[in-house]
Amino acid sequence: GQSLEQPSEVTAVEGAIVQINCTYQTSGFYGLSWYQQHDGGAPTFLSYNALDGLEETGRFSSFLSRSDSYGYLLLQELQMKDSASYFCAAVSGSARQLTFGSGTQLTVLP
Amino acid sequence: EAQVTQNPRYLITVTGKKLTVTCSQNMNHEYMSWYRQDPGLGLRQIYYSMNVEVTDKGDVPEGYKVSRKEKRNFPLILESPSPNQTSLYFCASSLSREETQYFGPGTRLLVL
Image (cartoon, rainbow over all chains, first blue to last red):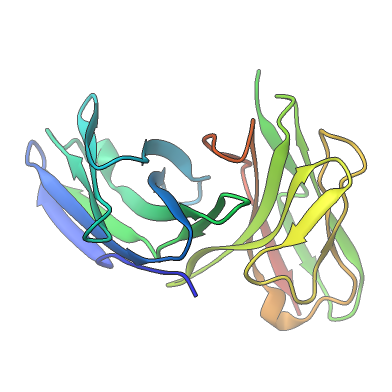
């Protein structure tokens, strides 16, 4: 089966940098996505890595190492509004299904 | 405005009473899917559809049905709801299988 592991909680202060790790075990792996979800809201797409390396989008970057079955989301210059749950999701199979990790609750303190 | 809509947003029902949660997207997306979200378990895919009249099971399809008669609509049907189907449900769509998925606002379901 498919499984993804990520820490359940991370806490950091405003202005800091935080890294959320994700390890995965999937067959037919195509890439790793990251989604953000605020309390009571819908998940929203942040990034997608199909190839090894770092992808940067503003304050957020995402990294993938296919050989290590590992990825991370890097959030820089943290702001209070970044407090949310962050999910890694593996894209796999001929139907490119998304299998989500159980999520990391990020709390940004003032 | 490009969006995915779901109705109802909140629903309380009783065991065994059939219900349908509607999902509609106005982006002409081919790919649509349903997820349920439970505390500590993340989002789990129930069913997905790659195009009209093409549907397939996700990771947790038991107790659910779907249909895709039109490109824009992808209703989720619970023929005989049970308390273990109490959950937060999200519909999502994307242009193709590889594209970013856009999620609807969610439907909170309580089955008594």
